[in-house]
Length: 283
Image (cartoon, rainbow, N blue to C red; front, side, top):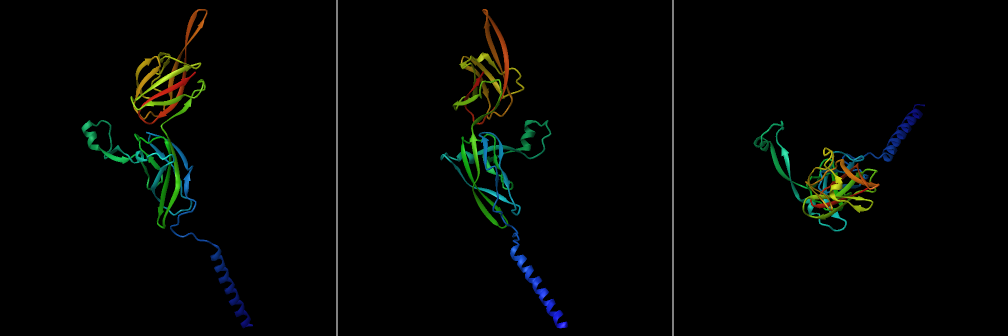
């Protein structure tokens, strides 16, 4: 009887050991320091405006062991354009001490330092691509190969991020406009914008549209002239997004009498690179 109980105990122990080994074989325990195979950027294709400061890309680590470090290993533009503008150094001001607000120019100079920084770089810890204001990146589609590293090793993600740069863009326009405003770059100089209003397809003289009302809203610039071919403004680039307010002077004739009325419309636009531009507005 004792021998039977002993055999039963041995069999039970054997079954438990085998069951534990079987479970270990079926359960995959992640190794410390692993990089997940599904790491990627959320929304791989991104858009940016040349000349403006931007932080681009949200990296999804999945189950990777943190921390991760990031490095750009290669950049290519799909049409073969040079990428030299992405590596061009830009002077930026860094503060070495708190700014109170009433410093003299000499005191402010002691609290600041100017450093040269690449126009485009990647944040080593977050994976965001950081673009500085004042960059001269041409319009194009840029593909980034990015190396991701943690304590277990590294992995190069081919085409991890694709950024399409535009030199200008119309963001919004009022429903009362006939169609979307159009932006055209017409030269490298001078740094100005010529606004042309079109009424029923015919161009208007500069004095028939007006941006001087409500200048608290809109692009920042200096009025130059009301010319026959539009209203001209001198601007500093980049021109950042603002709710631009434009007034149209409308002249209608009835019974030999001219009646003047005014309509106001808003639109938003950005222009990144310095140069001479024409913006066409349609009513």
